[in-house]
Image 1: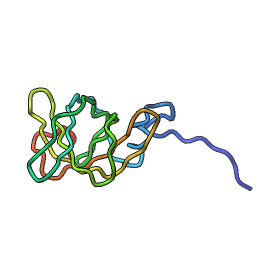
Image 2 (image 1 turned 90 degrees about the vertical axis):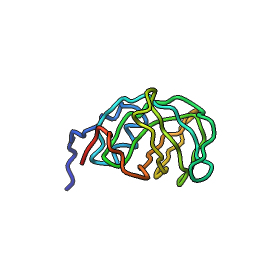
Image 3 (image 1 turned 45 degrees about the horizontal axis):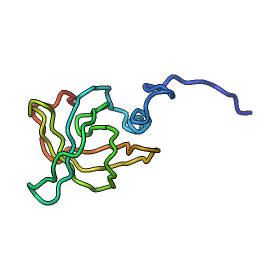
Image 4 (image 1 turned 60 degrees about the vertical axis):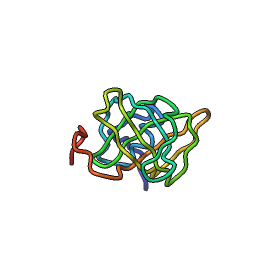
Length: 119
């Protein structure tokens, strides 16, 4: 006979929608990094930075954030912080659509030497 039990997870159920997506990535660590987001149109060329957002979680290879820009799996983006120390291209690897926002997991396309989350 099955018994009910409760288990404690790394991310609480009442956390943000970004936390809900990050829970599928066991290495995800909470961070808080303000960035500007731009869609990459072709190699090396980006559209203007379209919105400000906050990277809420990170791994050594991925970042997790919510935005208002409609995005799809495979979209390539540029994320840049205010002082330019983080200025990277990422590829969208997962999206969840919520009313008024898109929750995104994006993977770095290259090595990020100054990234704070290391493997």
